[in-house]
Image 1 (tube, rainbow over the protein chains, first blue to last red):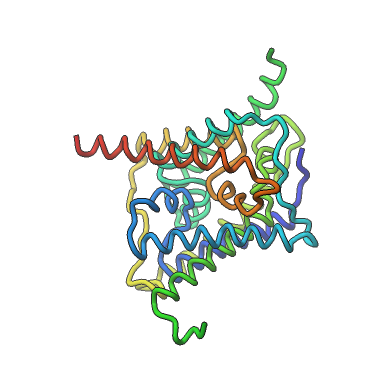
Image 2 (image 1 turned 180 degrees about the horizontal axis):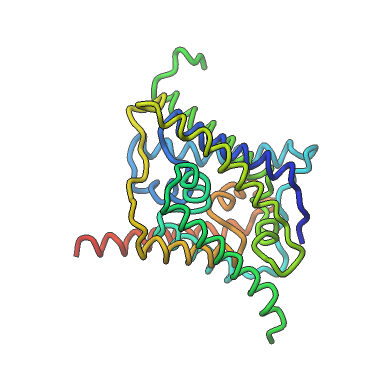
Length: 147
Length: 153
């Protein structure tokens, strides 16, 4: 169970949008994480380097908050008990294959695409949010009493 | 390092590192790296947590204001031109891809950005990323190989 945390959610969201805006202003690139990762092994020189440095920054930024963000209530997530390895692997395969096929994830379609008023991104975002809601709700409730 | 002496490449890499830093800090602050937080939004059957709506609202909100202003420029600050997605068609690849992504997201509560940011929590926690991320890469590259094979038979 998680509780509503409006202040950290809104400020965190503003930071995410600011990072994406800074990448667009400085390098002219879209901060779509699945696209950045997917392009990594097929890129050379600066196309490789900006992707790698963005991802390094991403991990560093999260790490700084985990270490020094205790006073704002930030904690590193605790690994879930009993969440199966198979579910993580199947989920990873679906997310990887799906974001490559659909050319984007929450950041590329959901944040940057909507900000660019892209009809493709709007359609994709509505579909993955609705599918995510149905999947999570069904798996965690309607199926919980299955044998 | 004196910024005046930095080469164009060094400036670009410092910039993209900074963009990632802010982005990653936002993911950690908003708790999007906690899969239970994400599932608390996606799962309508329990005690619903609307936090993710504010994260997406804040991120998309500020980007919606700033992006059009940036895109009025002829070029970004540190590169010769913008590199934006050019696809316009709403095709079966987009629809089916978003559907599969939603299935995976609803199953574990992870999307690509938070799963990568979670590496910062190793080794004390964040071990789920060590299973999720390799599977994500395999999924991405399987799709790449299939679509390449289809393009040049």
